Structures are given as structure tokens and as C-alpha cells.
Amino acid sequence: MESHYEALGLSPTADERAVRRAYRSLLKEHHPDQGGSRERFLRIKTAYEAIVGEQPLDGPETDGGTIPPVCDGASGPRQAPPTYDPDARSADESAVDSHETLTVGGRHLTLTLSALVHDLSLADLVDEHVPVATDRTVAFFCVHNTSSQPRCWRGKANTSFIGDDGFLYEGSSIVTPHAEQLPERWCGTDVEIPPGRALDAVVIAQEMPADVTVETVLYTQHASETGDNAPDGVDEPTEDTERYLFELRPLVRERLDRFPFRT
Image 1 (cartoon, rainbow, N blue to C red):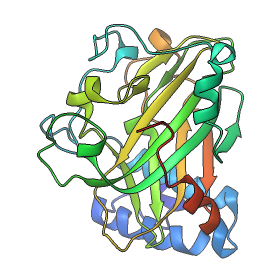
Image 2: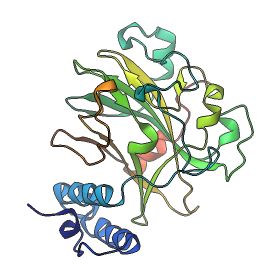
Image 3: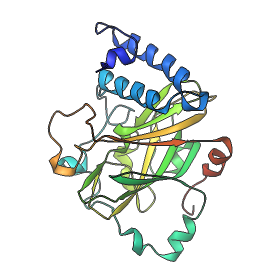
Image 4: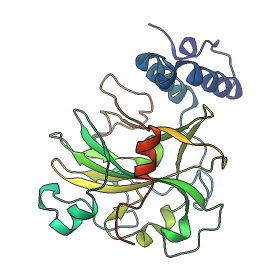
């Protein structure tokens, strides 16, 4: 079986800088939009994630910071997970959400990208001052657990924004300390979703250059991430890993660039 380093064309002694450089080069070469193989594209992504792993945590106001996720048994900003019955959503709410969206289904989740807002000032998203560079790309998801087991939504850790520069930008925890200030019903933290329930989730991208356009949004769900059943120390994708790939054509990207709720 091809090792993660072999997938990136590297030796096992390659340092992190070499890994990132190889990853960015291969991403451009094998991106499906450039005629590359989707399977090869995802194998490169898996190898990169497995080698680099989690980044060191900084303070809670920075991109790297975080707080204990709800689905790991710790108490998050919200005392009750903000999940809901998707079949019971009111007609008024459904009308707000009737704009164009992108939906990808799998065995674990049905994931809908409800909006992707570019250059959004986070002051327009939360009611508190966010003391870092605050114009960001923000993804709004509807996450429906269609499986028979609880599934843990890990938006910040498992979402990647791939730009037209070939770089991968991970999710940011910049608004996690202000999660209570997000618009009603929208969640910015990790949450366990019971079977049949849904969650409206916000994921903010790390800072990216102003001239970069997001071409792909990718969310990865590991089968091991099933609420309290997630084994300690599991950080490498299993055979049951699912990836939800949203490819953003120009017209679709333009139509998604709006709030999925009334402001």
C-alpha cells in the first residue's frame, strides 16, 4: 500500500515545510477542475492531513485556538446542543433557506453548503469585537445526521477551503469565544448530532490573501467520530472516512455569496 509520504512523492525524513510545498504543488496538478483524478486528489489530501496532523494550539483569540468541544464531553459555550428536527422547520425559516445551495449526501451525513460569504467582516456576524484581522470567508452549513448513530460535527478541524492559488486554508476558531453572539440557531462550536437531527453550523476560514478565490470546500467526517465512542488518540482517517466535496463554479459561488438568514 502506498504510504502517505509516497503519495506526496517524499521520503519519510521530509520536514513539514517540504510536506506543505509538495502538497500545494500536487494539489494544483491533480485538482479535478484541471482535469485531475478525484481519487488522486483525495489521496493527496488524506496524506497531507495524516502527516501534518493537528497544529499547535495558540490563545483562544487566534486562528489556532480552540475550546473543548461539546462532543468530547466538555461543556461548550452553549449548554444545550442547538440541533433540531429538519422536518419540523417552520415555513418562514424554509423560505429564508430557499436560495440556491449545494448538497452532498453520504452514509453518515447529508451536508448542505447554504452560503459561502467572502470578505465578511466578523463584526457583522457577532456582536462583540474580534481583535484579529476580521475580514474572512465564512461557510454556512446545514448538517443532517442521516445515520443511525450520533455523529460529531467538527467544523473548524475538519473543513478545508482550497483557493485558486492551490493553497489549503483550514477552519479558524476566531469566533469560538464569541459563539453565543452568532445569529440565533447558528453554531460555531463542535456539537454531537443525534440520529435524525440537524445542525446549522458556521465555519470561518483562516486568513487568506485578498486576491484568492475559494474554488473548493471540503469537509471530512471520520467514522470514529461518533460522539463519546470516538477512541482517544485517533487522528488518522479510517476506512470509513467520508469526504464531502463542494466544487464552486463561478455562477454558483456568486449565488452562494449572501447571508442564509435575514439580517
